[in-house]
Amino acid sequence: MIRLFEEHQVRKTTELSSSLWDFSQVTDGKNTPVGKVTVPSCWESYPGFEAYRGQGLYERSFEADGDVRIVFKGVSHTAKVFVDGNQVAEHYNAFTQFEAVVKNLPSGVHKLSVLVDNSFSEASALHVENDYQSYGGISRGVVLEKLPKHYIRQMHFTPIYKDGGWYARIKLVITSLTEDRWDGTVNVTLKNGETEAFLCSETCSMKENEDELTIETDEIACKAVSAWAPEHPTLYQVTARLQDESGCVIDDLTDRVGFREVKTQGKDILLNGKKLRIKGFCRHEDHPQFGCALPLSAIMQDLQLARDMGANSIRTSHYPNDELFLDLCDELGILVWEENHARGLSEEQMRNPNFERQCETCIREMIAAHYNHPSIYIWGILNECASDTEYGKSCYKAQFELIESLDKTRPRSFSSCRFKTDICFDLVDVVSYNIYPKWYHNTPVAEYLDDLYKWVQTTPGEGKPFLITEVGAGAIYGYRTSAKVKWSEEYQVQALEEQLNAILSYDDCSGVYIWQFCDVRVTNDWWNTRPRTMNNKGIVDEYRRPKLAYETVKKIFSSVDTYRE
Image 1 (cartoon, rainbow, N blue to C red):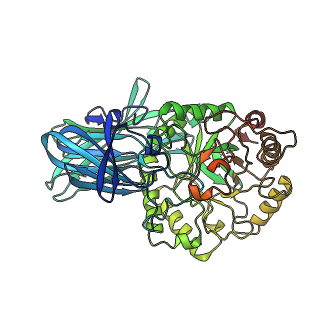
Image 2: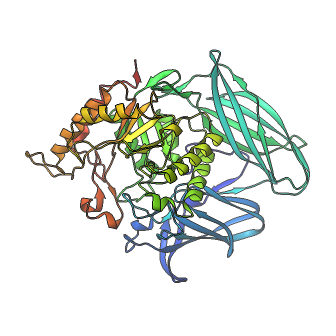
């Protein structure tokens, strides 16, 4: 499954990730066939590959002719794509969508090959040994599209609230696969249930040798629409249809959108004018059976459990998530903090010559693919990186400026762990901190939080919204003792009670994300600080079995409203 709805009625699409692929291990350029596997999947779920780090080859045949587009939602963490033995694409980063456009394929059966590599190397600045697992494989869906000579490559829908009503601006990118001059028209409609309303019609005129045309509309009044919010997540389908000179519809693109406004005002984050209080979880895409390639039912179970505990938000630590997850959050009214891919990198690691380029590519691809999701209320970057150094600040500055150039409608932030040394709060709309009193140190939570917040008010972060984006304590599932020592379920309950009550009662704090939703695998060099080679701070374990803290979190979160007075 690629999305929760059909993106095309006119453009012919075939899901290539709905059948078996041939998988081979690749060592020193030599292919050793392993057998048939499903896609999406991680090879860590294949017998004998549980800890494999290296290269693998995925292959299958497909039938097509003419111009085609092959879309990969995620390959971990580098991919080289071949059609009939010819390389057609190369991509780095497990967590963002990429594509290969192949022109003038002869009619018949063709061979698709994807060489995947999850090795760590100097060429990879973002995928490093870390406090989560870096899996290998085609971990998200793959789709084949038959393209006309002119097609809609991208559509961004921006809702605007003013003068008591809703408006929208639409940005469309039309791509040409010919060198000829061409004239056409694109019509855009908005659909709610069975009712479809016309929004606009725009002329498309492409000159000779012009391969791309960007169209940006004026503000369009959208009448009789309802706002998207956690308590009523109303969604609409927006469809663009491309016509040629004769009026024939040659291509289309549909996405789901919601009418909502996110902004900051003083110390508050406002959703549709209401002051938000975040009650959330940090969540990794990780499962003992599926690795990071969770199927829809497993993603849905995670969100059901989070909602049952009273959560209203998920932080996608520490990378963009599968679009199926975002589709579910759109439907369920769950707010999403989505961030680019980087965690805990030192200044030395950030000086890797590939670092800034790879980060910025991730940001571009993340926002391009996920812009229309109403559930995403904030963009984050560079979790716990070197925000206390001048070089680090230059990286934060460049990436925040890039985000602003791509999307001015959402606040920007990053999660800091630099206690009283961070120098980047002039760059953000929201100040965010990861804190672990009662775990890494025994300072009373209320005292630690108040001390930190008052220090922030002496920095350029003064008067800005303030979030706690990580807090928590570890517990080994089933380790029970009345002594309430660390790593016991009883101690996790005790720590979370003090942490959550202090944070959610602090007037100047807009909310909290618990670290973390479930226990997850970490890479092997973290074994000495992570029992079971896992990060064990989950409120449920890796199999989603609730720990004692489940009911504690549920009681506290359920007693607090989504909006502040």
